[in-house]
Image 1 (tube, rainbow, N blue to C red):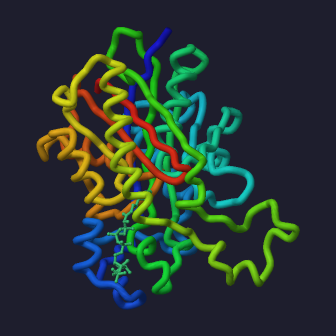
Image 2: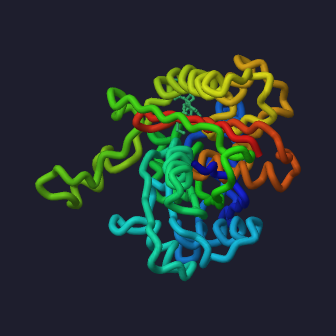
Length: 332
Ligand code: UT7
């Protein structure tokens, strides 16, 4: 058995900064409400004709590969988490593969929304542990801003979701070396409709028509209160599960990187886990909620800022649409 280790991180966010005041010009909202309820001060939105999920993931991947000291030719597999692919079909993994000149290797797409990156990391980890592959590129990237309901009804989601990409390179190391200790995946489909985007669904007689475009089902629906209440419980549960599995305590965590859903959720978990400020990484203030991209972007920034050192115990945790939730514990 091998162990997998993150050997390089990278990220890319689009140039266009959208502040809360910018949003208040198009939606009935204000800076004070957004900061108080979400912690977000600004976010990045893509520029149509310039940024795509593929182009952003290319930049993030190149950075991760460079930091890993690996050539694209050494990558054996791509695992790509997104719910906002450039095409309906095929998935984004093949598009990234083409752009990076990695034709021939496998490319898997994962659609587990906010938990997508940890699900992807877990999938990649299994391939490495079983010695099938040596180096895997794991990506989380989204363009959410083009699907937001920017009317007053959609304001609670429109102020949160945003665009960006993050990537890590996972490499095989000997089992006694530092790396991913464990991953833990969960889902409860009973709550599928609490945070979902129904259309264009395949089970309609006519998948897409002018009438459907005007329906609420064509916009992302989020029951914010329900999602919030479940998130704070599941985040804590899945972090404790990872700690218990490895016979470790909350105190042992050097850095917790929670999915950046809402700063109030992160702060609540931090308080419940009894972690001091320097042991939790948040960047939602600048980037909003980029769904599958929040964790790899945060990992990359935390590493750049010297917040992650060799030997540190890093905990990743996420919760989102599905509901799905997941955690990963790693020794850096
Ligand atoms: O990443 C995937 C998982 N997603 C999450 O984890 C998100 C979880 N949920 C949340 O983060 C929060 O529920 C939201 C930020 C979405 C909403 O915050 P909230 O504190 O739950 O607000 P609320 O929906 O209960 O709304 C409170 C009030 C309402 O007004 P009334 O009825 O009290 O008069 C809303 O109409 O705030 C109003 N409101 C807004 N006001 C200004 C809702 N959105 C806005 C807005 N600007 N953007």
